[in-house]
Amino acid sequence: MMKNIKFLFYLAALFTSAVVADGEEKVVVLTDSTLHDFVAKHEHVLVKFYADWCMHCKSLAPEYEKAADLLKAEGSSIILAKVNNEDAKDLLTEFMIEGFPTLKFFKNGNAIEYTGNRQAEGIIDWCKEIILPSVKPTSDIKAEIEADPTSIIFLAAGTDPESKLHKKFESEADKYRTQAKFFHSKEGDGKISVHHPGQDPFFFTGSEDEDLAGFFKVESLPLFSEIDQSNYMSFILSGKNLSWFCGSEEDYKKYKDAFTKAARVLRDTTIFVWVDSVKLSSIKEVFVIKTVPAVAYQTQDGRYIMEHAHYSFGSSESIVSFYKDVEADLIKKTIRSEEAPEQQEGKITTLVGTTLSSVVGGPKHVLLLIHAPHCDHCKTFMPIFEEFADYALDLHVCKFNGDANESPLDSVKWDSFPTVLFFKANSVEPVVFSGERTLEGLKEFVAQQGVEVSDVHTEL
Image 1: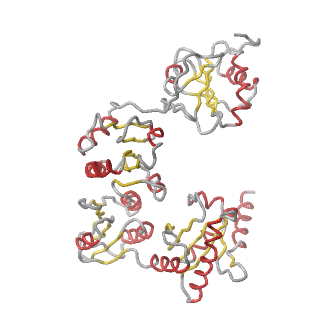
Image 2: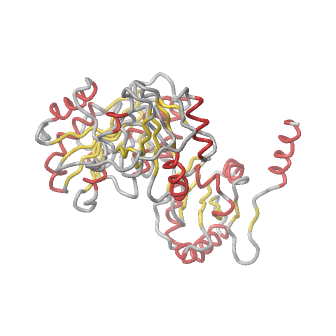
Image 3: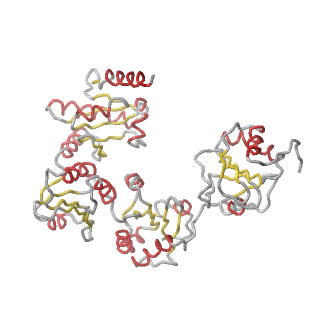
Protein backbone atom coordinates (compact mmCIF):
# COMPACT_ATOMS: atom_id res chain seq x y z
CA MET A 1 0.00 0.00 0.00
CA MET A 2 2.79 2.41 0.97
CA LYS A 3 4.60 1.69 -2.31
CA ASN A 4 1.41 2.52 -4.25
CA ILE A 5 1.07 5.83 -2.40
CA LYS A 6 4.68 6.72 -3.13
CA PHE A 7 4.16 5.83 -6.78
CA LEU A 8 1.12 8.08 -7.01
CA PHE A 9 3.14 10.96 -5.53
CA TYR A 10 5.83 10.25 -8.10
CA LEU A 11 3.33 10.39 -10.95
CA ALA A 12 1.85 13.60 -9.59
CA ALA A 13 5.30 15.21 -9.49
CA LEU A 14 6.13 13.88 -12.95
CA PHE A 15 3.04 15.26 -14.65
CA THR A 16 2.77 18.50 -12.64
CA SER A 17 5.27 20.74 -14.36
CA ALA A 18 5.97 24.44 -14.30
CA VAL A 19 4.00 26.34 -16.92
CA VAL A 20 4.27 29.73 -18.55
CA ALA A 21 1.17 31.85 -18.44
CA ASP A 22 -0.53 32.59 -21.74
CA GLY A 23 -0.80 36.01 -23.30
CA GLU A 24 1.75 38.76 -22.77
CA GLU A 25 2.89 37.45 -19.39
CA LYS A 26 6.22 35.61 -19.56
CA VAL A 27 6.45 34.71 -15.90
CA VAL A 28 6.75 31.05 -14.93
CA VAL A 29 4.03 29.83 -12.57
CA LEU A 30 5.31 27.66 -9.72
CA THR A 31 3.61 25.86 -6.84
CA ASP A 32 4.41 23.80 -3.75
CA SER A 33 5.03 20.77 -5.94
CA THR A 34 7.12 22.39 -8.68
CA LEU A 35 9.36 25.09 -7.20
CA HIS A 36 12.17 22.92 -5.82
CA ASP A 37 12.50 20.89 -9.00
CA PHE A 38 12.47 24.06 -11.12
CA VAL A 39 15.15 25.95 -9.20
CA ALA A 40 17.29 22.80 -9.16
CA LYS A 41 17.21 22.69 -12.97
CA HIS A 42 17.71 26.42 -13.56
CA GLU A 43 20.70 28.34 -12.25
CA HIS A 44 19.12 31.78 -11.82
CA VAL A 45 15.46 32.20 -10.82
CA LEU A 46 13.73 35.19 -9.22
CA VAL A 47 10.51 34.08 -7.51
CA LYS A 48 7.69 36.40 -6.51
CA PHE A 49 5.41 35.20 -3.72
CA TYR A 50 2.11 37.06 -4.03
CA ALA A 51 -1.57 37.07 -3.10
CA ASP A 52 -4.47 38.00 -5.38
CA TRP A 53 -5.94 40.38 -2.80
CA CYS A 54 -2.67 42.29 -2.27
CA MET A 55 -2.67 45.80 -3.81
CA HIS A 56 1.14 46.05 -3.71
CA CYS A 57 1.29 42.78 -5.66
CA LYS A 58 -1.03 44.22 -8.29
CA SER A 59 1.17 47.31 -8.59
CA LEU A 60 4.30 45.19 -8.99
CA ALA A 61 2.80 42.79 -11.56
CA PRO A 62 3.23 44.89 -14.76
CA GLU A 63 6.82 45.86 -13.87
CA TYR A 64 7.64 42.25 -13.03
CA GLU A 65 6.21 41.03 -16.35
CA LYS A 66 8.07 43.77 -18.21
CA ALA A 67 11.34 42.67 -16.61
CA ALA A 68 10.61 39.05 -17.55
CA ASP A 69 9.96 40.05 -21.17
CA LEU A 70 13.16 42.10 -21.42
CA LEU A 71 15.31 39.36 -19.90
CA LYS A 72 13.82 36.74 -22.19
CA ALA A 73 14.30 38.95 -25.24
CA GLU A 74 18.02 39.35 -24.54
CA GLY A 75 18.47 35.62 -23.93
CA SER A 76 19.38 35.99 -20.28
CA SER A 77 19.81 32.97 -18.02
CA ILE A 78 17.67 34.78 -15.45
CA ILE A 79 14.11 33.48 -15.24
CA LEU A 80 11.28 35.27 -13.44
CA ALA A 81 8.66 33.14 -11.73
CA LYS A 82 5.74 33.63 -9.38
CA VAL A 83 3.97 31.66 -6.67
CA ASN A 84 0.38 32.32 -5.61
CA ASN A 85 -0.07 32.02 -1.86
CA GLU A 86 -3.05 29.71 -2.40
CA ASP A 87 -0.78 27.20 -4.16
CA ALA A 88 2.13 27.40 -1.74
CA LYS A 89 1.16 26.68 1.84
CA ASP A 90 4.30 24.59 2.40
CA LEU A 91 6.60 27.07 0.64
CA LEU A 92 5.27 29.99 2.68
CA THR A 93 6.24 28.12 5.83
CA GLU A 94 9.59 26.88 4.50
CA PHE A 95 10.75 30.31 3.37
CA MET A 96 8.97 32.17 6.21
CA ILE A 97 6.95 34.40 3.91
CA GLU A 98 5.19 36.85 6.23
CA GLY A 99 3.96 39.46 3.77
CA PHE A 100 3.27 40.05 0.10
CA PRO A 101 4.85 40.55 -2.27
CA THR A 102 8.07 38.83 -1.17
CA LEU A 103 10.80 38.17 -3.73
CA LYS A 104 13.57 35.60 -3.40
CA PHE A 105 16.35 34.92 -5.87
CA PHE A 106 17.50 31.32 -6.27
CA LYS A 107 21.11 30.99 -7.37
CA ASN A 108 22.18 27.38 -7.81
CA GLY A 109 19.29 26.43 -5.54
CA ASN A 110 20.27 28.80 -2.72
CA ALA A 111 17.61 31.35 -1.72
CA ILE A 112 18.74 34.98 -1.47
CA GLU A 113 16.51 37.80 -0.20
CA TYR A 114 15.68 40.34 -2.93
CA THR A 115 16.71 43.85 -1.87
CA GLY A 116 16.22 45.82 -5.09
CA ASN A 117 13.45 48.21 -6.13
CA ARG A 118 10.17 47.31 -7.83
CA GLN A 119 10.71 48.87 -11.23
CA ALA A 120 11.50 46.66 -14.24
CA GLU A 121 14.91 48.23 -14.82
CA GLY A 122 15.77 47.97 -11.13
CA ILE A 123 14.75 44.32 -11.01
CA ILE A 124 16.93 43.53 -14.03
CA ASP A 125 19.95 45.45 -12.71
CA TRP A 126 19.72 43.76 -9.29
CA CYS A 127 19.42 40.29 -10.80
CA LYS A 128 22.39 40.84 -13.12
CA GLU A 129 24.48 42.00 -10.18
CA ILE A 130 23.49 39.06 -7.99
CA ILE A 131 24.55 36.43 -10.54
CA LEU A 132 28.11 37.74 -10.59
CA PRO A 133 30.57 35.75 -8.47
CA SER A 134 30.02 36.39 -4.77
CA VAL A 135 33.69 35.81 -4.01
CA LYS A 136 36.11 38.34 -5.47
CA PRO A 137 39.89 37.98 -5.77
CA THR A 138 42.16 40.24 -3.72
CA SER A 139 45.85 40.61 -3.05
CA ASP A 140 45.42 43.15 -0.24
CA ILE A 141 42.65 42.51 2.28
CA LYS A 142 43.68 45.55 4.34
CA ALA A 143 42.96 47.77 1.36
CA GLU A 144 39.54 46.14 0.91
CA ILE A 145 38.70 46.78 4.57
CA GLU A 146 39.88 50.40 4.39
CA ALA A 147 37.81 50.94 1.25
CA ASP A 148 34.67 49.63 2.97
CA PRO A 149 35.13 50.04 6.75
CA THR A 150 31.46 49.48 7.66
CA SER A 151 30.98 46.09 5.99
CA ILE A 152 31.50 42.59 7.35
CA ILE A 153 34.24 40.99 5.24
CA PHE A 154 35.07 37.29 4.89
CA LEU A 155 38.43 36.12 3.55
CA ALA A 156 39.55 32.72 2.29
CA ALA A 157 43.33 33.11 2.39
CA GLY A 158 45.19 30.64 0.22
CA THR A 159 42.46 28.01 0.15
CA ASP A 160 42.55 25.52 -2.74
CA PRO A 161 39.81 26.60 -5.21
CA GLU A 162 39.08 22.92 -5.92
CA SER A 163 38.79 21.87 -2.28
CA LYS A 164 35.46 21.03 -0.60
CA LEU A 165 36.10 23.79 1.93
CA HIS A 166 36.54 26.46 -0.73
CA LYS A 167 33.52 25.23 -2.69
CA LYS A 168 31.50 25.51 0.51
CA PHE A 169 32.90 29.01 1.06
CA GLU A 170 31.59 30.02 -2.38
CA SER A 171 28.14 28.48 -1.93
CA GLU A 172 27.69 30.07 1.50
CA ALA A 173 28.86 33.41 0.12
CA ASP A 174 25.98 33.26 -2.35
CA LYS A 175 23.52 32.95 0.53
CA TYR A 176 24.88 35.89 2.51
CA ARG A 177 26.16 38.23 -0.20
CA THR A 178 23.60 40.91 0.71
CA GLN A 179 24.84 40.90 4.33
CA ALA A 180 28.61 40.76 3.85
CA LYS A 181 31.48 40.83 1.32
CA PHE A 182 33.65 37.87 0.38
CA PHE A 183 37.23 37.68 -0.89
CA HIS A 184 39.77 35.03 -1.83
CA SER A 185 43.52 35.56 -1.91
CA LYS A 186 46.05 33.24 -3.54
CA GLU A 187 48.49 33.85 -0.72
CA GLY A 188 47.78 32.58 2.77
CA ASP A 189 47.71 29.65 5.14
CA GLY A 190 44.43 28.15 3.95
CA LYS A 191 42.40 29.72 6.75
CA ILE A 192 39.04 31.44 6.56
CA SER A 193 38.42 34.57 8.63
CA VAL A 194 35.80 37.23 9.18
CA HIS A 195 36.59 40.91 9.70
CA HIS A 196 33.93 42.87 11.57
CA PRO A 197 34.21 46.69 11.46
CA GLY A 198 36.90 47.91 13.84
CA GLN A 199 37.67 44.40 15.12
CA ASP A 200 40.57 41.98 14.78
CA PRO A 201 40.00 39.08 12.38
CA PHE A 202 38.15 36.08 13.78
CA PHE A 203 39.12 32.70 12.33
CA PHE A 204 37.02 29.69 11.39
CA THR A 205 38.25 26.74 13.43
CA GLY A 206 35.82 24.02 12.34
CA SER A 207 37.13 20.70 11.16
CA GLU A 208 34.53 20.00 8.47
CA ASP A 209 33.35 22.05 5.53
CA GLU A 210 29.79 21.65 6.84
CA ASP A 211 30.82 23.55 9.99
CA LEU A 212 31.33 26.55 7.72
CA ALA A 213 27.57 26.92 7.23
CA GLY A 214 27.10 27.64 10.93
CA PHE A 215 30.08 30.01 10.93
CA PHE A 216 28.58 32.05 8.08
CA LYS A 217 25.10 32.00 9.61
CA VAL A 218 26.34 33.67 12.79
CA GLU A 219 29.26 35.78 11.58
CA SER A 220 27.28 37.35 8.72
CA LEU A 221 25.36 39.12 11.50
CA PRO A 222 26.85 42.30 13.01
CA LEU A 223 28.39 41.97 16.46
CA PHE A 224 26.07 44.65 17.84
CA SER A 225 23.56 46.56 15.73
CA GLU A 226 19.92 47.59 15.51
CA ILE A 227 17.27 44.94 15.03
CA ASP A 228 14.23 45.90 12.99
CA GLN A 229 11.60 44.45 10.68
CA SER A 230 14.06 43.97 7.82
CA ASN A 231 16.58 41.81 9.67
CA TYR A 232 14.96 40.34 12.79
CA MET A 233 14.42 36.88 11.27
CA SER A 234 18.15 36.56 10.58
CA PHE A 235 18.84 37.15 14.26
CA ILE A 236 16.02 34.87 15.42
CA LEU A 237 17.24 32.04 13.18
CA SER A 238 20.85 32.34 14.31
CA GLY A 239 20.24 29.56 16.81
CA LYS A 240 21.80 31.64 19.59
CA ASN A 241 20.36 33.29 22.67
CA LEU A 242 19.49 36.94 22.07
CA SER A 243 20.59 39.83 24.27
CA TRP A 244 18.36 42.82 23.61
CA PHE A 245 19.97 46.15 24.51
CA CYS A 246 16.97 48.41 25.10
CA GLY A 247 17.76 52.10 24.96
CA SER A 248 17.81 55.27 22.91
CA GLU A 249 20.13 55.94 19.99
CA GLU A 250 22.23 58.05 22.35
CA ASP A 251 22.52 55.08 24.74
CA TYR A 252 23.50 52.79 21.88
CA LYS A 253 26.26 55.09 20.66
CA LYS A 254 27.53 55.66 24.20
CA TYR A 255 27.94 51.97 25.03
CA LYS A 256 28.47 50.48 21.57
CA ASP A 257 32.20 49.83 21.93
CA ALA A 258 31.89 47.98 25.25
CA PHE A 259 28.99 45.84 24.06
CA THR A 260 30.73 45.06 20.77
CA LYS A 261 33.77 43.76 22.67
CA ALA A 262 31.54 41.70 24.96
CA ALA A 263 29.63 40.38 21.95
CA ARG A 264 32.83 38.98 20.48
CA VAL A 265 33.67 37.18 23.72
CA LEU A 266 30.17 35.71 24.06
CA ARG A 267 29.52 35.00 20.37
CA ASP A 268 29.38 31.21 20.79
CA THR A 269 26.18 31.43 22.80
CA THR A 270 24.77 34.94 22.48
CA ILE A 271 23.89 37.48 19.79
CA PHE A 272 23.62 41.15 20.79
CA VAL A 273 21.05 43.46 19.23
CA TRP A 274 19.87 47.00 19.93
CA VAL A 275 16.18 47.87 19.97
CA ASP A 276 15.40 51.59 19.98
CA SER A 277 13.28 52.21 23.07
CA VAL A 278 12.19 55.59 21.69
CA LYS A 279 10.80 54.14 18.45
CA LEU A 280 9.39 51.11 20.28
CA SER A 281 8.24 52.47 23.61
CA SER A 282 6.36 49.26 24.46
CA ILE A 283 9.64 47.33 24.70
CA LYS A 284 9.81 47.93 28.46
CA GLU A 285 6.49 46.17 28.90
CA VAL A 286 7.44 43.36 26.51
CA PHE A 287 10.61 42.49 28.42
CA VAL A 288 9.37 43.58 31.87
CA ILE A 289 12.06 46.26 32.17
CA LYS A 290 11.73 48.98 34.79
CA THR A 291 14.12 51.56 33.32
CA VAL A 292 16.28 51.95 30.21
CA PRO A 293 18.96 51.45 29.19
CA ALA A 294 18.83 47.79 30.16
CA VAL A 295 19.55 44.42 28.58
CA ALA A 296 17.00 41.61 28.30
CA TYR A 297 18.86 38.32 27.94
CA GLN A 298 16.40 35.83 26.45
CA THR A 299 17.29 32.14 26.67
CA GLN A 300 15.33 28.92 26.26
CA ASP A 301 15.19 28.74 30.05
CA GLY A 302 13.83 32.24 30.57
CA ARG A 303 14.62 35.95 30.59
CA TYR A 304 17.25 37.71 32.68
CA ILE A 305 17.57 41.49 33.01
CA MET A 306 20.92 43.29 33.18
CA GLU A 307 20.35 46.63 34.88
CA HIS A 308 22.64 49.61 34.50
CA ALA A 309 22.58 50.14 38.26
CA HIS A 310 24.31 46.81 38.90
CA TYR A 311 26.60 46.40 35.88
CA SER A 312 28.71 49.01 34.13
CA PHE A 313 27.58 49.27 30.51
CA GLY A 314 30.81 51.09 29.69
CA SER A 315 32.93 48.06 30.62
CA SER A 316 33.01 44.91 28.49
CA GLU A 317 34.36 42.98 31.49
CA SER A 318 31.38 44.04 33.61
CA ILE A 319 28.97 43.10 30.81
CA VAL A 320 30.54 39.65 30.44
CA SER A 321 30.37 39.15 34.22
CA PHE A 322 26.57 39.37 34.05
CA TYR A 323 26.45 36.29 31.81
CA LYS A 324 28.76 34.45 34.17
CA ASP A 325 26.41 35.36 37.01
CA VAL A 326 23.45 33.99 35.04
CA GLU A 327 25.32 30.74 34.42
CA ALA A 328 26.13 30.53 38.13
CA ASP A 329 22.42 30.94 39.02
CA LEU A 330 23.08 34.26 40.74
CA ILE A 331 20.48 36.13 38.68
CA LYS A 332 16.76 35.48 39.03
CA LYS A 333 14.57 35.06 35.97
CA THR A 334 12.22 37.89 35.15
CA ILE A 335 8.67 36.87 34.36
CA ARG A 336 5.63 38.74 33.14
CA SER A 337 2.90 38.74 35.75
CA GLU A 338 -0.41 40.38 36.49
CA GLU A 339 -1.08 41.68 39.97
CA ALA A 340 -2.21 38.89 42.27
CA PRO A 341 -5.86 39.34 43.31
CA GLU A 342 -6.24 40.68 46.83
CA GLN A 343 -9.10 38.27 47.45
CA GLN A 344 -9.92 34.97 45.78
CA GLU A 345 -13.51 34.48 44.68
CA GLY A 346 -15.28 31.15 44.34
CA LYS A 347 -13.70 27.73 44.46
CA ILE A 348 -11.20 28.40 41.68
CA THR A 349 -7.95 30.07 42.73
CA THR A 350 -6.62 32.67 40.28
CA LEU A 351 -2.86 32.31 39.91
CA VAL A 352 -0.47 34.77 38.25
CA GLY A 353 3.18 34.59 37.28
CA THR A 354 4.44 35.52 40.73
CA THR A 355 2.16 33.11 42.62
CA LEU A 356 2.16 30.01 40.42
CA SER A 357 5.15 28.36 42.10
CA SER A 358 3.65 28.91 45.55
CA VAL A 359 0.79 26.55 44.70
CA VAL A 360 2.16 24.12 42.10
CA GLY A 361 4.54 21.80 43.93
CA GLY A 362 2.82 22.44 47.24
CA PRO A 363 1.27 19.94 49.68
CA LYS A 364 -1.98 19.60 47.73
CA HIS A 365 -2.85 18.13 44.32
CA VAL A 366 -3.44 20.87 41.71
CA LEU A 367 -5.62 21.00 38.60
CA LEU A 368 -4.61 24.04 36.56
CA LEU A 369 -6.46 25.59 33.64
CA ILE A 370 -4.28 27.79 31.42
CA HIS A 371 -6.55 30.07 29.41
CA ALA A 372 -6.61 33.33 27.46
CA PRO A 373 -9.32 36.03 27.39
CA HIS A 374 -9.42 36.08 23.57
CA CYS A 375 -9.87 32.28 23.28
CA ASP A 376 -13.41 31.24 22.32
CA HIS A 377 -12.75 27.61 23.30
CA CYS A 378 -11.73 28.87 26.75
CA LYS A 379 -14.95 30.85 27.08
CA THR A 380 -16.94 27.71 26.27
CA PHE A 381 -14.94 25.51 28.63
CA MET A 382 -14.72 27.89 31.61
CA PRO A 383 -18.29 27.27 32.95
CA ILE A 384 -17.64 23.51 32.81
CA PHE A 385 -14.35 23.94 34.67
CA GLU A 386 -16.07 26.12 37.27
CA GLU A 387 -18.78 23.50 37.75
CA PHE A 388 -16.12 20.80 38.17
CA ALA A 389 -14.58 22.80 41.04
CA ASP A 390 -17.78 22.19 43.00
CA TYR A 391 -17.11 18.44 42.89
CA ALA A 392 -13.40 18.60 43.75
CA LEU A 393 -12.46 17.34 47.20
CA ASP A 394 -8.74 16.79 47.81
CA LEU A 395 -7.78 19.02 44.90
CA HIS A 396 -6.70 22.64 44.46
CA VAL A 397 -8.51 23.89 41.33
CA CYS A 398 -6.79 26.90 39.74
CA LYS A 399 -6.80 29.04 36.62
CA PHE A 400 -3.96 30.98 35.01
CA ASN A 401 -4.13 33.61 32.26
CA GLY A 402 -1.40 32.35 29.94
CA ASP A 403 -1.69 35.41 27.73
CA ALA A 404 -0.81 37.95 30.43
CA ASN A 405 1.49 35.83 32.61
CA GLU A 406 4.63 33.75 32.19
CA SER A 407 5.52 30.65 34.14
CA PRO A 408 8.49 30.68 36.51
CA LEU A 409 8.55 26.87 36.32
CA ASP A 410 10.30 25.23 33.37
CA SER A 411 7.92 22.27 33.57
CA VAL A 412 4.79 24.40 33.13
CA LYS A 413 4.48 24.99 29.39
CA TRP A 414 1.66 25.41 26.89
CA ASP A 415 1.34 25.97 23.18
CA SER A 416 -2.43 26.33 22.89
CA PHE A 417 -5.49 27.39 24.86
CA PRO A 418 -7.13 25.99 26.86
CA THR A 419 -4.55 23.67 28.43
CA VAL A 420 -5.35 21.68 31.58
CA LEU A 421 -2.52 20.28 33.71
CA PHE A 422 -2.62 18.05 36.78
CA PHE A 423 0.13 18.16 39.42
CA LYS A 424 0.46 15.64 42.22
CA ALA A 425 1.19 17.06 45.65
CA ASN A 426 4.83 18.09 46.09
CA SER A 427 5.52 17.74 42.35
CA VAL A 428 5.94 20.27 39.55
CA GLU A 429 5.80 17.66 36.77
CA PRO A 430 2.44 17.93 34.97
CA VAL A 431 0.09 15.36 33.51
CA VAL A 432 -1.63 16.88 30.47
CA PHE A 433 -5.41 16.51 30.16
CA SER A 434 -6.36 15.26 26.69
CA GLY A 435 -9.90 14.01 27.28
CA GLU A 436 -13.25 15.49 26.39
CA ARG A 437 -13.85 18.99 27.73
CA THR A 438 -16.87 17.94 29.72
CA LEU A 439 -17.67 17.59 33.40
CA GLU A 440 -17.46 13.81 33.13
CA GLY A 441 -14.23 14.08 31.14
CA LEU A 442 -12.60 16.09 33.93
CA LYS A 443 -13.90 13.75 36.63
CA GLU A 444 -12.54 10.72 34.79
CA PHE A 445 -9.17 12.43 34.28
CA VAL A 446 -8.56 13.29 37.95
CA ALA A 447 -9.83 9.87 39.03
CA GLN A 448 -7.15 8.33 36.80
CA GLN A 449 -4.61 10.34 38.81
CA GLY A 450 -5.86 8.72 42.02
CA VAL A 451 -7.79 11.75 43.25
CA GLU A 452 -11.23 11.39 44.79
CA VAL A 453 -14.06 13.38 43.24
CA SER A 454 -17.41 13.91 44.94
CA ASP A 455 -20.51 12.50 43.30
CA VAL A 456 -22.47 15.28 44.91
CA HIS A 457 -22.37 18.94 43.91
CA THR A 458 -20.97 20.90 46.87
CA GLU A 459 -21.95 24.49 47.57
CA LEU A 460 -19.73 27.23 48.95
